[in-house]
Length: 146
Image (cartoon, rainbow, N blue to C red; front, side):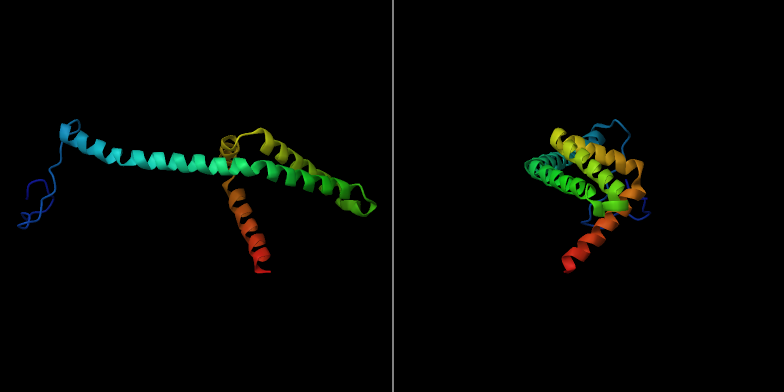
């Protein structure tokens, strides 16, 4: 067999052979490993930088989103007080409460905390997340179709 290969044939002229396998702890093996891992460090840095930039962008829009959600909650609460609300009154009141709590969280928690909570909830109930994404995609598709 060729040196350092699994092939029974010697390497062709001009074609470099694969390096020999080395024992763990060998200096050449550890330096090769550190070179490969060194290539991942810039990617980690880039990912972290991109995440920070995204969080700053989201932080800039959270206040407006929170105000919009509060406005919608107020509208639902007003609608629930009318006589026409009838059987929908409990649903309108409950939805307004959920929107108020969501608005409060947007104002009082950092983007990193909100993302960590969303990731935890997605791990707990992945089927619900997939169903929610499908529903949101359907609604968005219908809105954009018009």
